[in-house]
Length: 284
Ligand SMILES: C[C@](O)(CO)[C@H](O)COP(=O)(O)OP(=O)(O)OC[C@H]1O[C@@H](n2ccc(N)nc2=O)[C@H](O)[C@@H]1O
Ligand SMILES: Nc1ncnc2c1ncn2[C@@H]1O[C@H](COP(=O)(O)OP(=O)(O)OP(=O)(O)O)[C@@H](O)[C@H]1O
Image 1: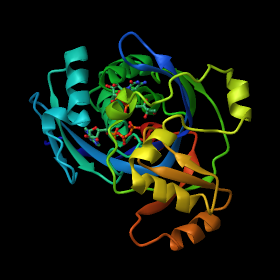
Image 2: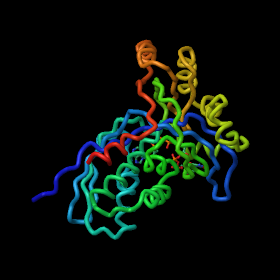
Image 3: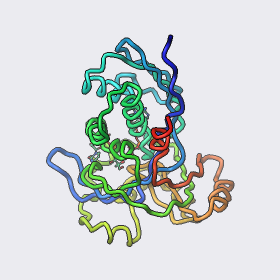
């Protein structure tokens, strides 16, 4: 009897509602203070458990990412190696999130793969153990595994659950692929924002320390942000390229989307403090 396919595992995008860079560590990574919130725009994954250890990925991804580099296969392989699980999986990815956009799409795909296979393979690692595996693959993966909006420190692995408002966002994805590594290696990146207490951070205006540099290097980002600021308080997420404007009502966000210049790509999504992955995990 062939194994059934377990369908519709969501991999949500995230926004960094603020992103402060406090310094550079000896290992080259940067110490951050950031506020992660999910949005209801997701990649979707299906999984079928197989008896052989092979890992097979079918995807509609546009940008060419070699299988060996794909974070989904790297995550599945890490779980096999950590647990000694002898079987494998066939995985289907419906890629919907823009890549290299600061929305954490690849990181989220990896997190959903770890959470889904940990259940389907019955390896039953604890969430903290899955987050430790994820951190080795990317700084953004732990927050997707825990699945709650969080104030994050360290490189993004020290998480404290928070419950900010869940507004509507108009997200614009400029036609630019910004390398996270390139931004963090730029000598012009500010790296000296003082560490502040979470209460102070949550009550002051929110900003992204990477924004000025990326806006200066990518005219498409500058143009998208300039347009969006006419409609709502707006800023960049992660290391870019995506920018997001915040609206109280969905109708306001949709009205702005209707006026988006034809050369820009955008979508409306709502902030989510509980990841749809957690909801899927609790409703197998
Ligand atoms: C900036 C954020 O988008 C905020 O959410 C994330 O921290 C980035 O997380 P990510 O995309 O998973 O980044 P990774 O793939 O782990 O790292 C890519 C590269 O960015 C640099 N990097 C990343 C995170 C960090 N805290 N400091 C860094 O210096 C490192 O050179 C690293 O090699
Ligand atoms: N399944 C995947 N989906 C998207 N990108 C992937 C995937 N696997 C590997 N990658 C590679 O990882 C890179 C970063 O992916 P990701 O989408 O996480 O970054 P991002 O959108 O810039 O978000 P952030 O920088 O905030 O993590 C991509 O540019 C791509 O080259």
